Amino acid sequence: MSADTVLDVREIDGEPFGDIMSALSELEEGETLELVNSFEPEPLYDVLGNRGFEHETEQIADDEWHVRISHA
Image (cartoon, rainbow, N blue to C red):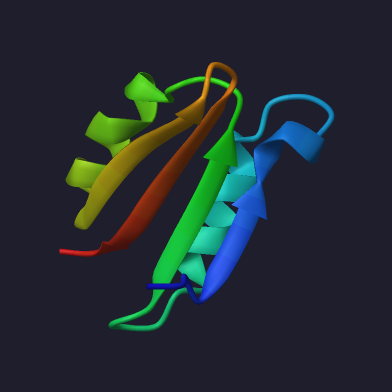
């Protein structure tokens, strides 16, 4: 199943939190954001839950993690 939006934060210079929150704010009900990161973004999970999002995480390689995020 493909995501509606893919955000590869490995390409962002600096802290990606603002970019992630911006991408999430643009999601419509039922849409999914796929976040690609070089590590598992565990600190993000509480933020997602507090803002009404669910996530599924998959490790693709040692330095590649994909997190599928959708509205709860």
